[in-house]
Structures are given as C-alpha cells and as structure tokens.
Length: 194
Image 1 (cartoon, one colour):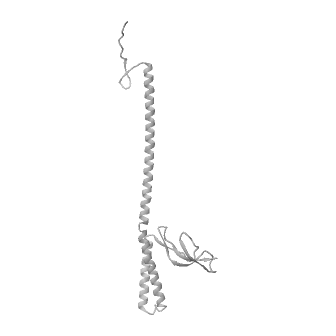
Image 2 (cartoon, helix red, strand yellow):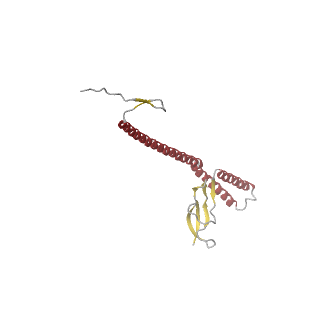
Image 3 (spheres, one colour):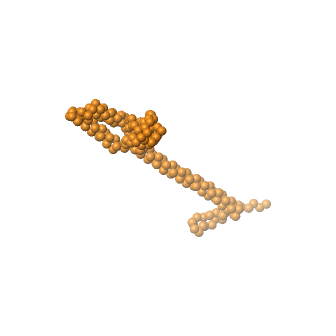
C-alpha cells in the first residue's frame, strides 16, 4: 500500500489585489461562495435594520423637538394665567369702585371738585389696568347685545325682553376675558328667553 503525501492547495496570485488566494477545488469554492453570500445577506439585513432604526430615531427626535417647542410656546403664552386671573379681580373692583362713586355722587360730581377728581383718578387707574391687560394678551370679551356663546359666556338667568331676539345677552354681570385666545374667565350674563 502506498501512502500518498497530502498535497497543499495550489496558491495563485490574484491579479487585482495582489493577494495570494488558495484554491481548494470546485466543491469547496462553491461552499465558500454560498457561505459568503449568506453572510452578505445577513449583513445587508442588519444594515437595513440599523438604517430603519436610525430613521425611526431621527423621526422620534424630530417629533420630540416639535413637541418641546409647542410646550415652550404654551408655557410662555400661559405662564401668567394664575396671576392674570387674580389680577382680573382688581380690574373688577376698579370698575365697581367707579360705578359706586358715580352712583353716590348722583350727578353732583360735576359740582364737587373732590368727587370729580376721585372719579377721574379711578377712571385713569381702570384705563391703565385695561391697557396693561391688553398689552399682555388679556382681552375683554364683549358680550352685551351679542348672541349667547356657551364657549365664552356663562348664563346666570333668562329674562323676558321682547326688544331683542331670544338667546341674546341682555345684561353683563361680570366681564369675561381671554388670554391669547384661550378663555381665562367666562362672562357672567343674563340671556333673553323666547
């Protein structure tokens, strides 16, 4: 029996890369190609999965950036909502004070310089307060003579008034306000009934 020496695979030089490539025979080369193709497919799938994950992450970050921007805008617009609501009480009291002074003077305010000065002073305070509120986005809701709007008005009573159509605001009891087009306080009103 003759024992043959095992041959080493022949090496050949690759023309493009200059590397030496061993030749293992056609059967082994076919297996190697299939293994490499499978690895290539697996790598392509991983790459596609990574690319998809990256796109999702980019979309999530963009959505987060937009949401944070909206939240910051809302925080800026409505940060003073509680303070504004408290300040409306001051505006109501200034209006009541002016009405009380005018009612108690009973037309004698023009003759009495002290009462006239008091009326002018309270009116100036009220005007300054109204301008300041408007400057900061707080706008008074005009309700008298307009149709009742449940989004802006709160009806306290219905009264009979044949001079206006049903559903019209006939009396404004307390002024309502909006802050940057958002309802801060509804107007308390009486509405004409049919």
